[in-house]
Length: 535
Image (cartoon, rainbow, N blue to C red):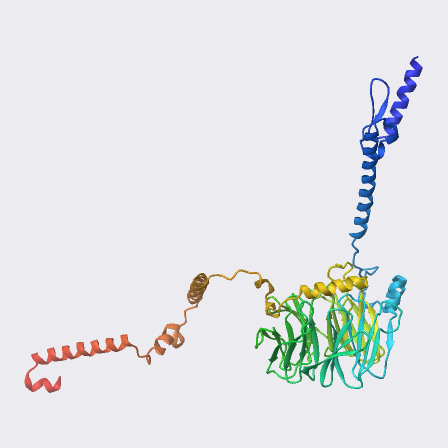
């Protein structure tokens, strides 16, 4: 008997250690402490109603687990890549594109090897759609091609316009694009069919599309700026900068303000509801050649013919830092994650963390052997930098430049035909009015203060500023060292006051003259008549 008890106790201890949550009662039976439906057998219950409830609970539990697994898969965010060296003494800008292509997966290798050799109709300019799936190439001699570059497929459409093409841009989706040709701007669809000729955009040199407002803007040869609504066809505004022609037109995605660079070194910022610039910033002593904004609209990069690249704080319109390049830059581009790309001649430099802080060395360096680089464009949601040059187009892999996670309600690279249609309808319904474009977009939702309170607040601020100014001036005067001789401050001040005629000085001189005459008359009474003439 004791042996049996000891054997039973041993089995209990083993089961307790092997299965957590088991417990025993006085009758020697052991049941699980967990009450989860998956651990309870419905067939052991004699109650039909209870058996059905257990089956239903088990089914709901399985569905909840499956849904939780799917949510984890949907919300699994990817991390951005980067270049890392094996030793601290190595520099990332020494790594070549061939080495990067050999180290990345095959899918990224195909993107790195995407090149188009077009030596006859260049130089070419590149422009990507907002979701990064399509590439718009425009040659200066009239060649236009829309390519779905992520797939090894023929071009979606290809045009031979046989006239000068200065610029092109994609519209609200990949089905429409605008081209700045020799005399006017034209809108085409993805089949290559001409839809509209925009007669108000005469000899445009640059194009920009405001996606949230459905506004197509162009800069003309005489410094003109034209806004036209692509959904209704109405011309919203026409401005003249009066600063000469501007081949540059950059769009700030934060406040939808357009920036124009001028030969005098100034950058003007425009809105459709103001006939004069909303802000004018004198950025360089030489002509401005490139302007670019980051994705958040907080920083602006400018370059000029003196080889300087400056970074500006758009909120304060103040310079932050500058970079020097060996030759005048021909194009600037800023990626979704804040990388700055600069090109001059055949070289392309990419700077990481170069906006908020000043970088000490480039992140990447690349030389294009085909010819002179015309423009740069980062592909959204991809670690790819598009390089348009004199002999065609080529890709450059830049690890960490693209946003790894996309919002399907904003840009969906994997959208179906139905989803694209619904997105277009939602964009039209969410279209913003041109009057809402301001330098500070937060002021649109702010409450306008009362006029009397606003005036009183301004008066109070002016009084405080005047009080501070007087206090600073007093401290400055007290801190002055006393000088001896003719250059003493008080002596100089008195000397300046000699020729100043005021009312008090005139009255003082009159009183002094009357007093002197009174004394002379009093002294003359006591002197004999014969001696008065000697007084």
